[in-house]
Length: 311
Ligand code: R5P
Image 1 (tube, rainbow, N blue to C red):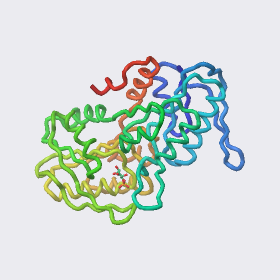
Image 2 (tube, helix red, strand yellow; image 1 turned 60 degrees about the vertical axis):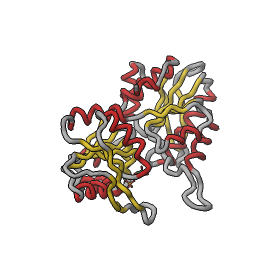
Image 3 (spheres, rainbow, N blue to C red; image 1 turned 90 degrees about the vertical axis):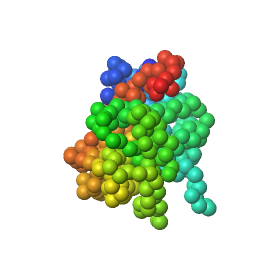
Image 4 (tube, rainbow, N blue to C red; image 1 turned 90 degrees about the horizontal axis):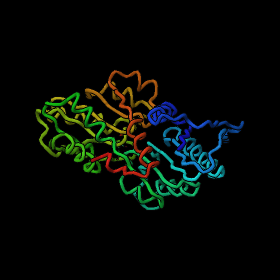
């Protein structure tokens, strides 16, 4: 088994390699003067089971292209099996046509990754579970929920908890977390978005008064959804609000927005390389997911069960 990494999140790649007690495959990524990407693998991978790690996070297009070129290099170097490990799968929010004459970019990206030569995909908390079906190759979708549940029990165990989904689309994810928290009660924020990129909290389904709320979501991008939801929960009598979000996209002024928000804390994973602003924020905490991904990689290589990780 070999682990190769793109440049999107080298610390995570190193942590996964350390978990597996193997070195990262020696490869280099260079740029031509016009920014074209060139990848060279400096060791033999012929006949190997290779895992290539790359989140297609900001800059999404560069990181995606680097992944595709890395897969192509591995294929032409006769790797036996190539698994694209994409902790954060970008373009996932474009998973259906929200209106006429719009693309389904998540499907397009899945096709390109497959066409490049990936034999399998491993991702974490895909925006929608059905994105697995966009790939015509085996796709494992890992869940950060067990890692989050353990952290919530350690930090907030024994309090009057309520798990909250910040929108109707996230209810399945929220229910799964609630189940892991001794069947904590569930609430939903009914969010209306007037224009793309803007969010507006409308009302809350469920009685949050006197509760310590745990907001759960897959992505925090601008932070608008989260900060508005936190304020709405407090306005409805919640005692406190903390948020657990798998992928800290945190674009633009998101960190400043979180710092100024009513949130007690925002907990993200390191599926995306945290920016310095995110690392420096006293309101943001980062949970490592290398053990989760590392263990899944080990099981895929051993041909053993991945789903039993979540039993
Ligand atoms: C949307 O369906 C996602 O699950 C997130 O709620 C959304 O991407 C968060 O975006 P923002 O932080 O920009 O409000």
